Image (cartoon, rainbow, N blue to C red):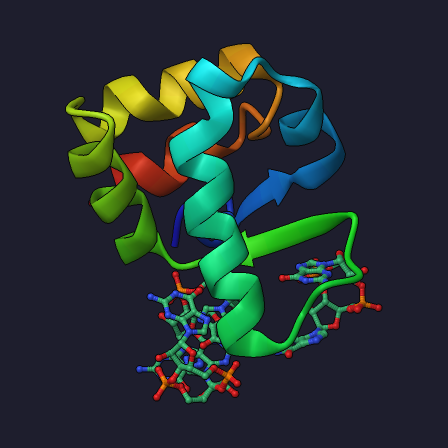
Length: 89
Ligand code: C2E
Ligand code: C2E
Ligand code: C2E
């Protein structure tokens, strides 16, 4: 058992995402819209995504999962806690 607790969830801040310039957030926004549509979950301020979705997003952005996580934290879309979720890969 680690003192840091369980792996944190990857929670996308949808309001922040909508404030970002299209050329940055576009692929993320399309991916998120697909998940919302599959779940029928349209009204949230945030969206919890799967760990494996971060891998897919990393491929889309042509980055490593760790690099993309840093970028998403810089954009304010992910909480810095998310670093621990990627460490668990
Ligand atoms: P599925 O993967 O066959 O999942 C069927 C249902 O199992 C989901 O219906 C949900 O109620 C539940 N489920 C599966 N995995 C999880 C999980 O990790 N956490 C929670 N809370 N529930 C889980 P739902 O939500 O209506 O999704 C329907 C389908 O939409 C899913 O079928 C999957 O194909 C896709 N989907 C939805 N959300 C995501 C996502 O975040 N990432 C990916 N890759 N696919 C998703
Ligand atoms: P949590 O996962 O820490 O989520 C806290 C709050 O963030 C949720 O409060 C909700 O307002 C928002 N939130 C997080 N992820 C999503 C998302 O993917 N879509 C939307 N629309 N909102 C999201 P809420 O709904 O009152 O849920 C409180 C807690 O209850 C959640 O804490 C979680 O522990 C549990 N919970 C709620 N729904 C589900 C579910 O479908 N599956 C599982 N496994 N747990 C759930
Ligand atoms: P959560 O619902 O609290 O689930 C936490 C972890 O438990 C998931 O991490 C996954 O490893 C496992 N898990 C939960 N339900 C299922 C299930 O039905 N089938 C399988 N195979 N594993 C399950 P993961 O995948 O990283 O997902 C993180 C969070 O993303 C979930 O937290 C949930 O909030 C959201 N999520 C993921 N997939 C779905 C989905 O299909 N539908 C919905 N509504 N939410 C999802």
